[in-house]
Amino acid sequence: MVQKDDNDNKTKKQNKKEEEFDKELISKNPNLEIAQLFFLMGQKNDSSTWLALLEHVKKDEMAPFYEYMCTSLKIPIDQALLDKLKEQNAKRLDEINKQLEDAEKNLGESEVRQAWLAKSEYLCQIGDKENSVAAFNKTFEKTVGVGYRIDLVFNLIRIGLFFMDHQLITENIEKAKELMEKGGDWDRKNRLRSYQGLYLMAIRDMKGAADLFLEAVPTFGAYELMNYEELIFYAVITSVCALDRPDLKTKVVNCSEIQQQ
Image (cartoon, rainbow, N blue to C red):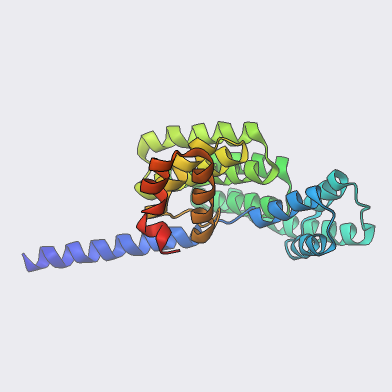
């Protein structure tokens, strides 16, 4: 009996470690803070916002996104900066492609998947939308576990949110739901609520967004999208816009998690 209890405790500890490891591996690519700065620049040409954008572009070697944002905002391209970023991209992609080629020739399926994931993440980091979507789809094909497949679909939803590509977002939200039916865990199901809520808020479906944000409040885990304080803010704002007074009092004003913020 003691031996069984010890084994159960070891199993629980191992599962906890694996869960924590998975959370550490959750990608924050693309960085939605950059998308927010880009949106603000579209509303008002502000030098501090532009400088913050450029800082991200340089840090993350975002040649494709730099071209995209300059064209969209009708701001002249700094050709020297663009050339430098493209050179950085070419060098890193050459390294990744060599690792991928080596994995395909000499290593196993797991190493091939990791190489494709590295390529997907880098293309996503630099803002190469089309190629990152294609690479994530290729990585998806190489991935067996349902949970890891859902994480890749979350990546695709975030790319959609970053560029506000409605088709990419809605198709992959539906794909995530289908995968959840096949074996998505509680954590991923809860994170999906935040993804759906963020998109519904973006398209002005405040009632739908409020319901999802409020459901996510007690067990929030989608830190790749926003922090907990931002979730509370979104939950309150959408609720004020969408809920009637009795529901607002019950679900927001009297909510202990919201009161603590």
